[in-house]
Length: 266
Figure 1 (cartoon, rainbow, N blue to C red):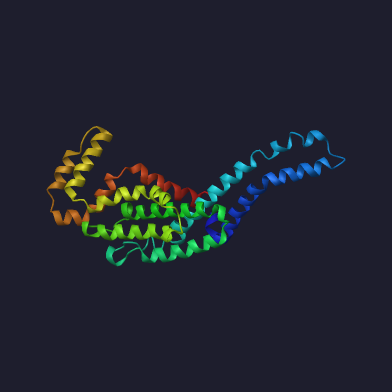
Figure 2 (spheres, one colour):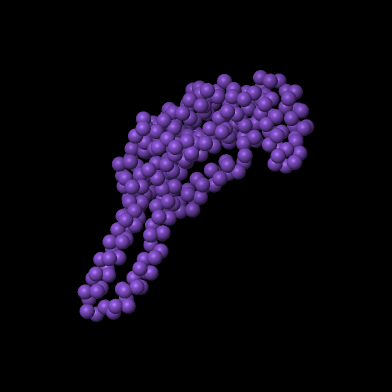
């Protein structure tokens, strides 16, 4: 759990260090060869063809280290440092009174710290990982937010506007991430959002279709029961639950696994 107790600056310094080692590797090899060739006690076989083998694994290790630290920073920020405004705050109770503004303010502060600390050559990667973690966190709130959250069809516009505001934060009026990256990593959430404005009967039919494709048999009994409940209670209290069931479970599991790995394995 060491990474939990490290500040953003410390983690970013580690990323900068690995990036510096990677960028200076060629120069370092040439410098060592030059010094060895000028050293009377050195043997030619020590540096003629064997030196590059000693550094063979270093570049790949640096790249992997930067990647792991970048993702760790991103998921630490979203799921640990900002959990009080994401998991404990976003859409808790009445969605209209617990929107995404608080999360965006604190997320922007963290993005400024990251931008000012990390080397410009790895900055886009880290910001991208933070955006991916933010989308995973937003999806987690929508699909597995627990009994403190309940969504109706009237909340769908609020949710869509908030997610647009989240993407706009990373777009930063064209000064942030490229639009194609934002579209790529927000695709899963964009696919889920239409479910929140879909009527319950259509969701049940889609669920039947997915169940039939996945398991080979529809859930007729469950669908028959749901279709005969009071529409107001059904739409307001079970809408988010129905959305959760219909979405492919694997996508959510992969999102959850990522933040668990990087917060518990260090």
